[in-house]
Image (cartoon, rainbow, N blue to C red; front, side, top):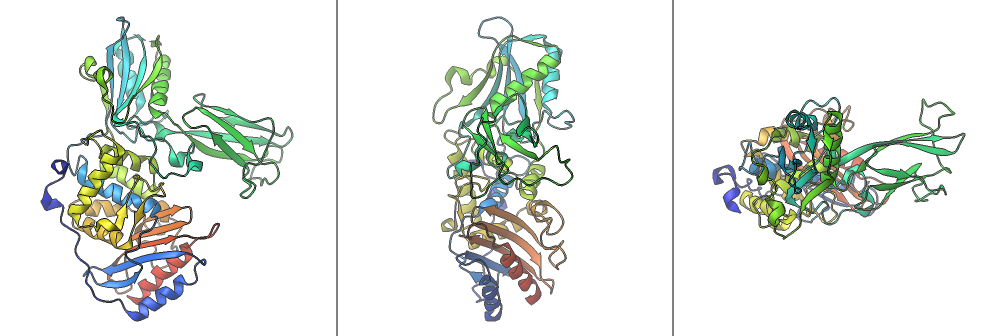
Amino acid sequence: MLKHFAPLALLLAAPAFAETLPSNTQQQAVEAELAKAPKGTRFGLLVIDDTGKVIVAVNPDQRFIPASNTKMFTTAAAMALLPETGTSRPDGSTEVYLVPAKQGKGSDVLLVGHGNPALSSAPDCKVACLATLADAIAAKTRVVGDVIGDDAIFSDQRWSLGMSWNNLGGDDATAASALSLDDNALPIEVRWDKQTSRASVQVSSYVTVTVPSVIAVMNPFRRPDFQLEHQLNSRSFRLYVNTANRTSQAGLPDNTGELWRTALGIDDPAHYAAWTLAALLRQRGVTVKGKLRALHRPVEVDMGDEGALRTSGGAPLATVAAPPLIDDVAIINKQSQNLHAELLLRRMAIGGSWNTLEDGLAAERALFELAGIPREGYDFSDGSGMSTYNRVSPRAGVALLRWIDTQSWGKAWYASLPIAGVDGTLKRRFTGTPLANNLIAKTGTLNATNALSGTFRAASGKRLTFSFFANDVPNGQTAIPAMEAVLLALYAAN
């Protein structure tokens, strides 16, 4: 797989750390702040300066669940391996073909995805619009047969190992597909009427949401106002309403009741894309005579005749390009967008043995070996950090950041990180402190986990690079205040 990598000159190993022991005074101050965190929390921290001198080290070689710090590794690998900066792997475009129908009359529509994260059906869409492809079909023909969503360039592994089951069906863990549309999520609005004690639901007709006749509390410990239950690989959801512990939102009239908005994850994005394209064609006066279906690529199974379906249509009728890679990397890192990270990892799988998720992870591992990131310092099962199987050591996190510093795309990558007190997932953190508009870092939050890795300028102007993890945080508590106090103390002491 090394043949896919950028020239070795671009893959310089991360600079080695100096073996200087950290200052006892700073070490003790950091440990004193960490002692104020919720009892039982396990911390890992490594801080170095630009010479490689270790400033502070707390369990630097222990491995931690990194949560969304996983996205640092995914996006950095993508910058090295994907088009625009690295190799000529799939560019993420979306294509539409007219192919001969099986019945021998007319043409079927084949919508082919290559991992485009931005394909949109929004009425105000400006870039990567599904409507562009619908317009091209309507200009060519007024009658079509089947409408087929083809995501077969990826193996059909829509979720990664180690995801929590309770995230499935929500937009944080929506299914990954080479043919993704609208971030594979559907907005839903639920309004509770106090007078009738009924819930009204507004959501796309692609899914079915039912309210059981018995209004029940599904989780008496958290006591949510609303909770959705989803049957995997279906388009059906059940809505439960907690009538015992509701809190009205400010500004709603008393006779209206609570208003709740969220998003539903789509389990078969290729089918949803075909369904939406068919609807757009009908709006344009095109008759759809056939069925809606999805074409998936099974893991370790040759696609055979179905795999040749695309080429039977010749050149694509129209193509919608994916956004520039760095634009997508900025969305992933600043917003911590899970689906886009998973799509990047799967695009890195192309050229592997079966285009599987493991092929993408193998491409990352081979790259990180060349980069000098210690192999014992990481293990990944996904690209987003939703998997609880992922592990990273602070030393591996700092090694990654130091390696990125040496790359031609490193400055652009660092610009994709959230800025404390300014934007992204750090917009409301460190406000009113010397680290506001100074610290840039990737955040991470998962059950019992907080993470933050990045860089900042200390009071002296010295640049510090750090990787900071908290695991085993007691339920209902957070380690963020202690972590922020440590970084502020390091700012002042250096």
